[in-house]
Amino acid sequence: MVEDSGVEHPREFDEETYRQMTAYEDGSFYITSRFDLMYWCFRRFFPDTKRFLDFGGGTGFWLEALATRHPEIDLFGSDLAVESLHNMKRRLGDKATIFHTDAEHLPFDAHFDLIGSFDVVEHIEDDIGVIEQFRPALRDGGGIMLTVPQHMSLWSVLDDKTGHKRRYVGDELARKVRKAGFDVLLDTSFMASLFVPQWISRRFMSQSADSVADTEHSLPGPLNAAFRAALVAELATIKAGARYPFGGMRIVAARKLS
Picture 1 (tube, rainbow, N blue to C red):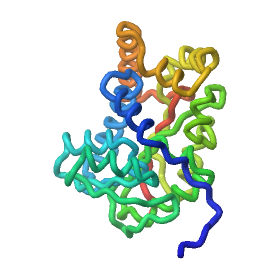
Picture 2 (picture 1 turned 135 degrees about the horizontal axis):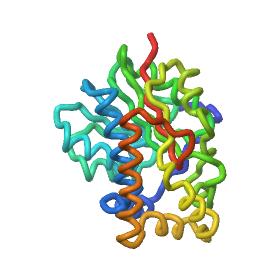
Picture 3 (picture 1 turned 180 degrees about the horizontal axis):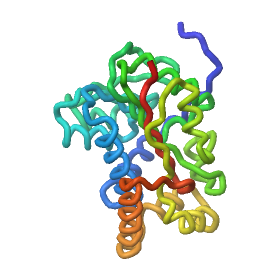
Picture 4 (picture 1 turned 90 degrees about the vertical axis):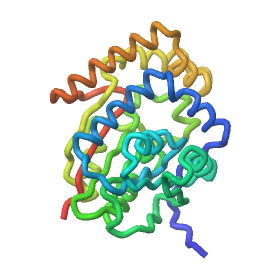
C-alpha cells in the first residue's frame, strides 16, 4: 500500500479534452510556434541526447515529433492520467516506452540525458519538489527543459478548468530550478509580441473554458497566419540572443549540477 503523502496531484483530463488538444496541433499558431521554440532549445542545448523522458506527455505530440526527427533517441513518456498513456501509446506504438507515474515516484536512477516537462509543473503544488525528483533520474551532465504559463493577469476560466495552481511571475521558475540543483542555461518568456491580444482574449472572451480554447486555437486563417509570423520573428530574436521579461509562456533549460 502506498502511503498518501498529502501532495495534491494534477487533475486528470478526460478523453474528450485530449481529442480537442490533438485537433489543434496541426494548425494553431500557438502550438506550432511553441514547438519551434522547444525544438530549437533542444537542438541548441541538448544535441547529444540519447535517452529522453517526456514527463507529463499529454497527447504525445512532442514525443511523436522527436521520434520522426530523431529515431536514434531512446524515448520515454509518462503521465499520471491513464487517458494520456492511451493517447501516447496509440501515436507512438513501439517507438517509445510509455509508463504510468506521478510527481513523487520517478523509478529511474541516472538513466536520462534529458527530461522535458511541458506545461506540467504549474499543476503541482510542490513544483520545486517535482523538479528535485528529476535530478537522480538524470545522468551526470543531464538536463531539463520546462515550459509554463505566465502572468496572473492572464488567469482565466481555462486555468481553473485545467487545474493550474499558478501562473509564473518573472524569473520565478528559474529561481526554483536553481534551488532544485540545476544550472540555468536559458530563461526567457515567449509570445511577448502577442501579450496584448492574449490579455484581451482572456479578459473579454472567457465565458467558458471551451470558448477560450476555441478562440485562441481556431482563429480565422489570415489572423492565425499573422500571429504565426509575429512569433516566427520573435523566435528569431531569441535565437540571436534576446531574452524577454514578459509573454504568455516561459521556457527554462538547465543542466544538473554535480
